[in-house]
Every structure is written in C-alpha cells, then in structure tokens.
Length: 572
Image (cartoon, rainbow, N blue to C red):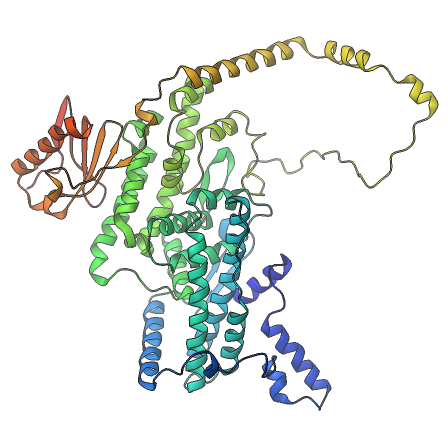
C-alpha cells in the first residue's frame, strides 16, 4: 500500500475524508459494467459535464511557448530533486508499528500522479490540524477552506494524466497547481497566527495522537513554505518528533542512526518534490553548520551540572545559532545533525535537572531555576520542557502521564486491572433493612478520619504548608530582577559605533551576544582586541557587563568580563 492509499484510509477512519474521486470512479465503473445504457465516457469521468466547468471558463489558456518552458522546468526540477535520493525507504516513525513506504516513481506519469495526490491529501491533513489548533488554542471558529475547486482540478488532471505530452495535460496540471497553491497560501496565512508552542502542545497532548502520516503531512507543509523563523521552528519540532520516541524518565531516543536518518530525509524530500533552498556554493557552510550542531551536542553531553548549561546561556546560544544559519537548516546534512542535537539536549536537560533535584531537593531546585525561560529551552530541544512539569514527573514517574499513548520500555507487562462502573446498568434498589443500617454522615466521617495513618496525615499537612510557604515566598519576596528571569532581547545596531563589524546582536541579562561578520577572520589580533574593548566599553551605555562574540558557526571567538579578557581564535 502506497502513501496515498494509507492517507486515504486514515482520513476515512477518523471521519476526516469522504469518498475520494477514485472511489467514485470505481463505483461508476461498476455501474457501467452492469448497464449498457451508460456511456463509457461518463463512467470514466465520475462527474457529468455540468459539474466540472471547462478549463477555458476558469483561466485563459497560457501561451504554447510559456507552457513548454514551464513543463521543462518542472521535469528538470524533479530530476534534480531525485538525483541522489534512495530508491526505497520503509520508515517506522515515532516508534509506531505503522510502516511508511516511499518508492521512487517509475515514470513521469507516475511522478505527476503521485505528486498531485500527495499534495491534496497532505493539505487535507494540515487543514484538520490547523482547524483543531484554531478551536483549542486560539479559541476561534476555524475558517475552513472550500476545497471543492481543488478536488475538481485533481479529478480533471487524473483524467488526462496518462498523456503527459498533450495540451490538455499541461492545462489540467497548471490549473491544479494554481488551486493547490491557493489552498496552501490560505493555510499558511492561518498557520502564521499559531505559535510554535501551541503546535507542540497540540501534537503532544491530543488524543488520539496524530499518526505518522499526519505528522509527515505537517513536515511536508512546513518544508515547502517560504522560509521564516516560525516555519523553521515548526519544521524542527515536527521532524525531531518523527525521528525519535519517548522512553523512561521523560527522555527520548533516536529511531535511526545518523546515516539512516540522512537517507530517509533525502527520500522524503524527493517524495515531497522539495526544491533546495541553498546552492552548491553553500556546501562548505552546510558542513560547518552540521559540525557546529555536533559540538553543541557534545557540550550538552559533557556538562556535569545543570549550572554549567545555565551559566553559559547554552539554550539561548542554540536558539541564536538556529536563527543564524537560516535556510541552511533545511539541508539534509544539517537537519540530521540538528535532530541528534535536539534529542541529546532534551535528555541532558532532564538528567541534569534530576541530578540537581536529588542533591538539593525539589523545592530548592524550583527556587533556584524557577525563572528559566521555558520557551527558550523548548525551542533548543524541539520539545516542550517546562521546569514545573519536569520536576513533577521526576518526583513521581508513576503519576506522570505519558506524552504518547505508548507503554514505557520498563513498564510491567501486566498492569493491574482498573475497576470500572458501567453507568448503563441500573443500580439495584436498596432494601428497607439496608437503609436502616446506614450510618449517619458524621459517624462515617469520624470513623474514616480515625482510620487514617497519623504519620501520613501529618506528612500531608506538612507538605501542604511547605507548598503554600514556597508559593507565598516566590510570589512576594523573590526579587524579579535576577539574571535567570531576564529574557533575551534584540540590540539595535543603528546607534552603536561598532555596528559595521556585527551581523546580529542580542542581550541576556548583563551579557551581550554578538555575531561577527566574516571580516573578523581577516582582522589582526590587535584589531580584534580593539573591537572587543570597544564593545565592552559601550556596555556602560548599552547596559551590559559581559561580552560574548560568536562567529557564523556559533563558536565563541571573543569573551570579556570585568575579570577576564580573551580573544579565542587568534589569527595564525
């Protein structure tokens, strides 16, 4: 079963899709076989001539030269996309037993059919997710797209798909692509109002959980949208979730090795007809970006204490690096390294926080790190990581609800059955003798209170008092102006005198982070020191004490503080 048939079955099972045009064609064909009165042309059409307007009534016929050139570009693009893609890919994503089969089309005809079907069904799934997010998180009534014109265009294209050289094929394909583009643009406009955090919460908490094919549809949608930071962040989250699965202790594990994941991503790109957003000249930068992700991954895995990550603003640096590499993020080499880094960073966060909790206690840990920017951590790890919920799950793993409806690897094979009550069964009537034997409410409460373990009762009251005390102390007495409570803010380059050497600047607390331009590599050591001192001196006006300069790959090249001054990558 191919990906198109899988998506159709899933949509039908979830009542998200009515009969497709293929079902109608089969039904009409069976009717024709049983009746000689029905014309064969009508049986194949599935819709009568009045239901589908002629192409000339919808859009002017493009010029022959323009159509020939466009058709050639489409073929060249398809060949370039699939040039290095694997022939076959069988994926079991998110740890499910469902296998996604990807096969390279055997001919141009099969390629165009598969692309058309895949685009339409993918957008149907994305429409469902966006509508659900609008209802549940934006609290608005979804403005669903009327996809009737898309279905008609798809039906017309499938009628002439076998004759790819005909004018009718070119016209039908052009119309279908226009309808798909209009639908995609409408979805993109609605999706722009949805935050990355809202998408994460929906995907992690919706029941039943989204299938692998629904998540693949979202990945395809974000991969082929015009680039912006929200699109990149959503794609980052979706693919990380697709290629990993939850395990015990709130951590995740990768489903494939790096080389396997790289091959699967290339196969998906070919199946989605995704055009590269970078040129051949970017190969060196792609390699450097992937290497930088691996260095950040190693830094997270080598951290001995949770404080090591917080002091170095580790999560903020990852977020800044992802923004800095822009479209290069979508290169298969880079996204493979990013997924591995995301999983390692999330696991390091959980393990180091648990180590801090065991050493200092949950209350002290919450007091110390309660003001960390949870959104920055979640962006860096491409999963929702909130300090409060993570601490609760670490304290009581049995009470923590699994984010996916899947048993943990270490869960017992046979869980104790949960007693349930069938509300549809009427309760038996009480006899008069049973009613007389009922004790008064006060007697029942007195017996149950004396039956409680006194140590358990005292401990529970003590915990409640401690929790109330911590809440009151955190709400009224903790100073808000701490280094951990200050979010990262952008620094405008226009008013500062050294802007010609900076590409991007941000400030977190009393620390200045600046991304230097490539000209840094050609500067002498004296010029670099002069520039670093100028940034440090300007901190009296800009409001920072420490300075951290990074290059385009996210590596620190210069650092200055009241007691330390260093140029890290001195010229040879």
